Length: 112
Image (cartoon, rainbow, N blue to C red):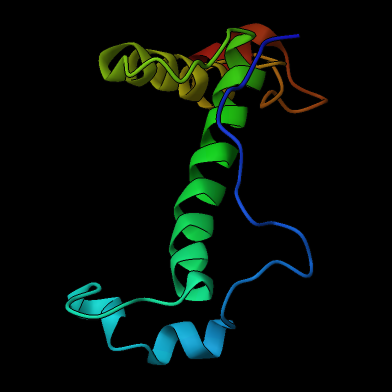
């Protein structure tokens, strides 16, 4: 099984994060954290949102390409793997003749 180094952060049901409602009302959502201190629950929410999507995307790539997705800073390499993952999922056909009507023939379908 291929390895995925990217893990979601603070995914436990009791994780120290602010609620979605608090997050959406937070002024820092638009401006970023400025002078003063952000609470750990606010910072954890930021990290969780980013790491959750990163982990999901990395797992998709790992699953589809059967290649390791490593935390090695190789952005061009990951972009290449991402393209390969999308190609496997969306550009290959498991049943290339699946769109032929059950009562049709291959020559008839090719004429269409």
